[in-house]
Length: 135
Image (cartoon, rainbow, N blue to C red; front, side, top):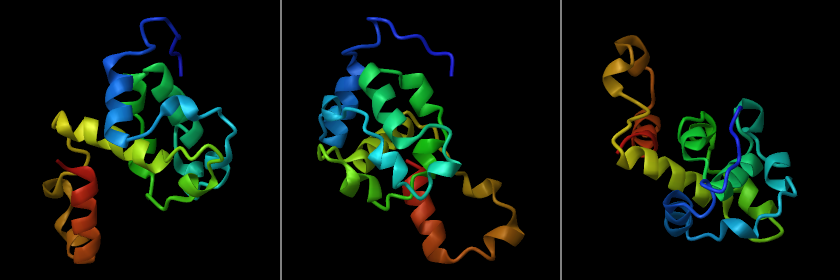
């Protein structure tokens, strides 16, 4: 990641929007890393949960919304239970997904799934994915 921290990033409308949608105070996180240490999906993420919070604190909208990590999160809430400051990281990740989906940037397009794969997907998994990945 080649992002540079500038005063421009801090206290942007993006930071305010994430905090409002998630109902969380991003600044409460002091980067202990317990959320990332307990995340079962961390090894598949391009940005770890604690890094997601840090980038959100600093207003790095593009880096977050273009990351794979917000879509890899399984919403298992392990991060939430491990946070000593009570930051609900899963809600922050969900807020980031919502920002991206509300901009009409679909992450999953059913028409792109090959019919032979689509026929093998359990209906509940497909419905869950549609809820998570589409607006």
